[in-house]
Picture 1: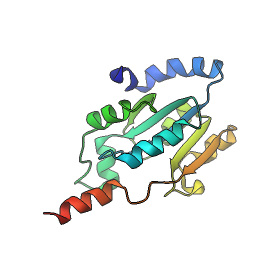
Picture 2: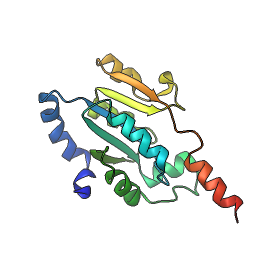
Picture 3: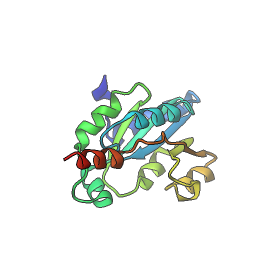
Length: 159
């Protein structure tokens, strides 16, 4: 079942009209999700609770390198996608190559767009488009003391 959750855009494009026909609320979030931790899981559970279908846009390896530097990602995109898909809160994972998910958001046109609390609503890519289309935008609180960068720093300090 996990592999059926990691899909190309073309696959999801076929399914979205049926979800809308059923009146399901489509939630979208995105990120690098490198070194999965409890904060990620908690955030994704909270995102899913806002709707019926949770779609996660996952930055490709090249995208992560451009955003975070050559030492990242720690975990390759296929394994990051697998970990996301293993979570019951995640319905679909789409890997995208761009630096931002703007084009993906335009295609999915979610009812609800979600990012972590380190993003102010006016900084969330695609927020304006989702709101103009009648959707909602949320910046969800993050679990304190947990981040991929903090985990990497802790590992490096122990060497």
